[in-house]
Length: 249
Image (cartoon, rainbow, N blue to C red; front, top):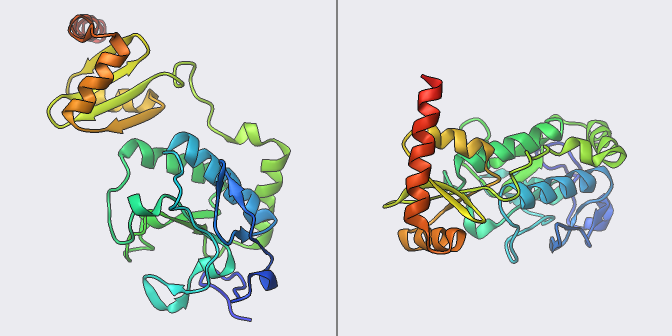
């Protein structure tokens, strides 16, 4: 039997390699499924945390098993062929395109990888200089089934302990940006415009979500958060930031 390039057995018949065709995570079904057992447990956690912390999973656009050559190296068998790879929101993150995620989103992807003990590889890392594939996640080359099973066992024993716990304000606070308006932190009832660094990276680190849009969308979100009191709120934010600078000087 042949193997995908990460060393897992691959087959044109998914049943021969234990692929479950009913795999579903974060409420989204992945056509043709993924490898059952430990791999499915790891991918379920990956998909759920991605959905909560990076961006919502979309249909269509999430894929699992499919027997084929690697999209970026025809001599190799894709990890999709062994049910050990998934794609998230493929239309938003096309193969070969870099920078489809914000820095805040990439930070969350890295955190989720760490929570999974390093057994999952992200195509955004380009396989050491190859073609970028930011939609793509796979069981890392060199990782054994026993290592995947150990991570899966830990997740099933205490899944809540593995997920990064948000601070008490994360559920509400988001950072928005647009070309003509800059950046702001906002939530129900408040809207704080951010000056240039160092405030922007500080805000990105504590916000649960980052939204990039146009100026009209920026203005609409400001109005929704403050019920039209955007100017007054911005003036208060400037005063708050000025006071904070004085405290830190």
